Image: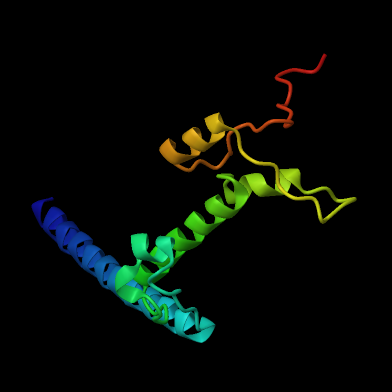
Length: 141
C-alpha cells in the first residue's frame, strides 16, 4: 500500500510540473500574440499636452502602443475621452440615447448624481439606471 502512495505522489508531482510548463508556455505565447497584434494595429498615443495622456501615459506620449501595459494605459485614455465627450456617461450607457429613427440624435447629458456615481463606483456588467430607462418588472401582472 505504501508503494502505491509513493507512485501516486510521483505521478501527481509530474502532472503538476506538466501543468506548470503548459501554463508558462501559454503565458509567453499570449504575450507574444498581444505584442504582435498591437504592432499590426499601429496605435499611437496622443501628444503630451492632452490631459488624459498626461494623466495616464505621459511616458509614452507620441509613441506606438506595443505592450500590454501601454494598451491598458491607452484604454484609460480612451475611457477618459469618452467620459469627457459624453458628459460622464460610460460607453455602455451611450447607446440608450441614440434613436434608430434619428441616428443624428446626440446623447443626453448625465445628471450630477450620475457623474458622481460614475467616478466612485467600480465598473459592473449592468450600468446604473439612467433617466428615461425602464426597469424590468419583477413579476408579470
